[in-house]
Amino acid sequence: MRVYNPLKNSWSYEDIKLPLRTHSENLVVVPSFFDMHTHVRLNGGEDYDSLEKAAIAGGFSQVLIQPNTDPLLDTNETHALHEKLSARKKVTFYRTTSLFGKAKPDGKKILCYSTDGIPYSYRDLVNAFRSQRKALVMDHSQMHEFEGIFYEGTRTELPRRPITNEAVAIYRTVMTGVEYGFCKFHIQHVSTKPALELISFLKKTFQLTCEVTPHHLLLSNELIDTVNKKVNPPLADVKTIESLRDAVKNGVIDVLATDHAPHFTKNQDMKFAAFGTSNIEIAFSAFFTALQDLPLVIEKLSITPRKILNIPYTFDSENFVVLDLNHEFEVRSKDFFSKGKNCAMEGMKLKGRVLGTKLHGKLVYWDGEFLC
Image (cartoon, rainbow, N blue to C red; front, side, top):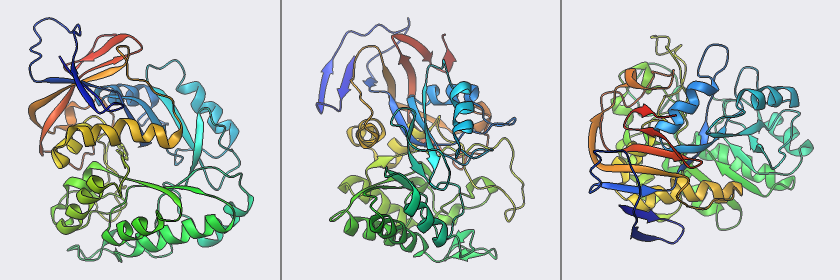
């Protein structure tokens, strides 16, 4: 079977044992994925059990949980609860901690700070940078002082925010952090051309990385027809999609991340509906459909996230993902293992899928079924 090793940027043929009646001509083995941007819901929502299944079905062996859980991941007590709930899983669940909380990154399971899902003011930002221990900061870059559900140019009567909102927020976070001695930043779910231009400029001076989601690479604001396409940051226009794809290819965007934000149901009123889309199970398919470049997708979905977070990784026969690159399918969220059925890409046709996932020496998932 063909094997792609991004650590060596090499292709090879290996004898890999797979279930019977498997035609291996169109299959490729690659390293398991790492998601830098995942949400878990407790209190009856997406728990660690359902999230683990969804992650495995999507080819992810490690994920990084964002802090806007209920309660927030901002105290040692809350982190202890999550550590208990996520223990003894096949998937490794790392966590961020709120930049505005009491808990600190420990370099083990709490990897860095994050502002994701937490509305904050400039005063909050300054106070946090003044008082917190220095570590990587992941930032949901948004000027929360300005209300707006969608970007300008979107056909809607609901509040809109300027396209420049994201870039202004990025500059504010990075420059304020630098003033107080922080030196490593990761900008989450980049969604606008001004943000890309600013990031490209800031990278010349500062240690800065960024990510993009599958929905921002595939969907434009012209397609917003259901509450499941209400995401934050919002969808932009078709030209922005082209700019985002180009930024992945030229290296301005470092990481492909899901921003998996599951909701079992959403309020059907667009104004009051929750933000977010459930997509961790189809993330590879969406990225591959958008970019059509397997080495590029694997590099930014598997290798680069681990490098940024200093997670050791070796590609071996004990942990890998089997891909069927020729498989085409229509997205049906009712078939998801995730409790989140709010998929922005519902009904879309995607190419390429995760056929199997091997973790810790065992083939745990194959062709839609869990083997152990």
